[in-house]
Image (tube, rainbow, N blue to C red):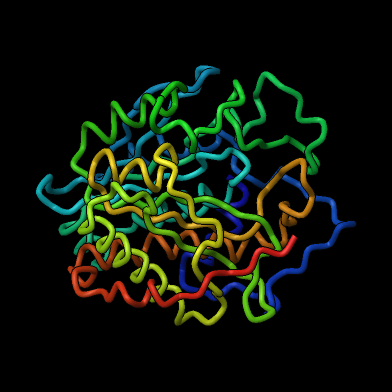
Length: 336
């Protein structure tokens, strides 16, 4: 887990160092994926963590097309507590969401008084590397046109299914496992679906480090919509004081019922937000790919998104969050 080890200091509250306008995209840069955590490294880390962490449980909810186990990390101290689910790497080339999740799991392993108190009041579920076949480039189609050097990572699963468009049909084994063994099994009160977008979205001549979107389908219960906006407000306000984040509304809202941010709200009445971070680890379209020099601050951003929302649910402050803060965020600009 070379990336997470290298970033251990960022989990200790040290602000990542980078240019004020964010790392520039350099078309001549070699994009390496070797420092990203592999599936085998993640599996080993999770299994060791479950052995050492008293409050952590590890559940296998299913398998990918290629037979990789899909892991659910669980911190459930009281079933009556509010529960939040973090879903990472639905798209296999959106890797730093998983890196942030692994850093957060490492952070929760601390027996600090703050952690112990928080876990008394919130249940945390984490699905890291949901699309493990795509994350490992182990697919039944060519990735020769992809940009990265080293192992390729792809948006799709092994049979070219976009898992984030499969939440109605649930045809892929990954999606079926998520719905049957997580969403229909646990009472989930909040969810964050964590992704990456392209590299050129900006606002006020600064690259956005991330964007937020609440459910957009008209069938979503209005209370669920308001609670989703509160969750978005908590995430935004939790990260904004650091000064190096630049977060706005996602610029391509969709009402499609098959995407996670709408499906979870429609099917299960779960308040949910889409959180898109800047840049992808690999893609066939170069402007979507951001070099590994950006990994530190993006991983830190994913970590903080989890930490701040978990804390707000635990202490109840999310119930007083102003949905208007999210509503008034302007949309980022799409520049390609």
